[in-house]
Length: 163
Image (tube, rainbow, N blue to C red; front, side, top):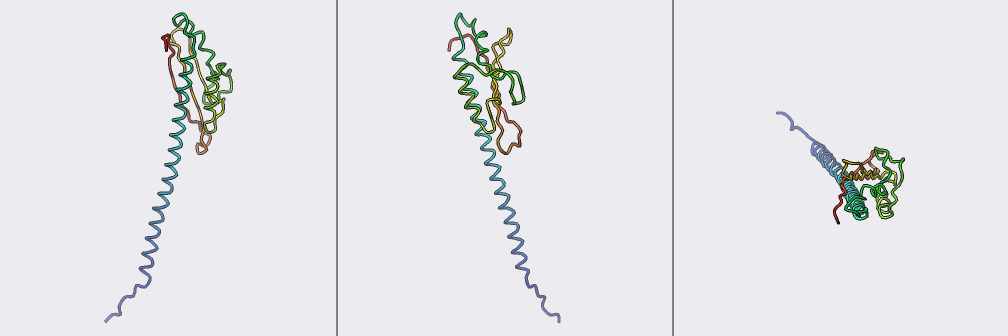
């Protein structure tokens, strides 16, 4: 007759494997939570940029010169242009807008993470056939973006109708 097989420590090994699997699951959940916070922050910045771009477009639409049945719109739009010559979120060339209200909104957009006034742009296209197109681009770079720019571009057309 054979002596009984002794399995000392098997329960301990099973417990250690179970703890390992459980801890890997917890670490995965913690990492997922970190990504969720990052995604929520990105959504918040996009919402802020969208609201600011809409506010800038609204200020332009309200303050543009509509006298003489819209004839002066194309002539008055250039005052709203801001850093309109460069691209790729580094708008170092070009003049700042001369409109104080729009300038204040651009300063608020510069409060986005990693942004300055040089990362905000308003391009005005008022030549014949462009229909007074205004393109507002707001850029920012969060800490976890590793220097890559995020941008929100808002395009609107300023018409001659009354507001």
